[in-house]
Length: 360
Image 1 (cartoon, rainbow, N blue to C red):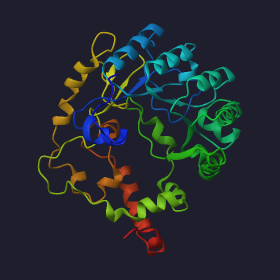
Image 2: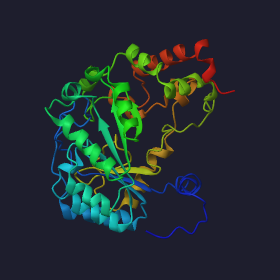
Image 3: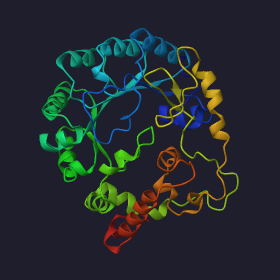
Image 4: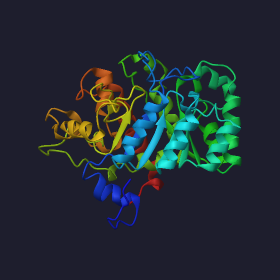
């Protein structure tokens, strides 16, 4: 990777003022495998034709190519990344290349051997998905037995060795009452905490995952007791719609095909982790060629009939067009549940009892 001589005072400034404007793909993910030791009810990879994972040499070749293209941030995801026997080889190789690395894992396979490698070559962060506060709810979500104890052991190893990690809670019906308990676990370990409640179909378009989504009323009940959620939704008026009545609005308002990409477990280059296209493979094609091709998505314009463009809450709702497509078969047709949840949030958090959270 070439040394940055642009003179920006931080990576964040360079991202905003240079890389994003030039559509430089500086954040890359490699899906090391679709295989996992868990069987989560909400997994968006379930039901897919698994295919074959890239070999060790193929993954290392992919890393070399990303290095030559000037990718700075690299994350490894799955499936479960630690289920690969060659994980340590791959990870150390990428670290020696100089990438800033994030690891996405369920945390149940973290061992002393893994920690030894992390102590020698620390990751920027280890992002752990936590599916319950105890064995009972964790087993229901993951459809396995005994893995909660392995998870807590892994988290303790990270904490005891000073490895930076975060905990993300995925709220579903099976762990309905666990939000604040998991948040407390994160706080006790000094970990950053985040959460997600909204489900979307599998990448093959199967709605089986939606059967496990919390009832909308249950989501509101959690958020009205959480200060971070209250602060966000109570200030909804600050997030006005900049696209209302404008012409020539881009179809994709996210950063798809701007800066982030994912190489799936077979080597295919995708403009985001939800968009899976088998058109360019890192073994045979360059990232730059794929990126030039994916520029077509940045040139697409939103139709005037897209109702999101007239919605006062678009900046809070932040609709994902790929989620639209997985739900409805159309990028521009929004699933009713998304709009309903946003309106319920506004209805609740516009009440006077939340006035003290509003920023003038």
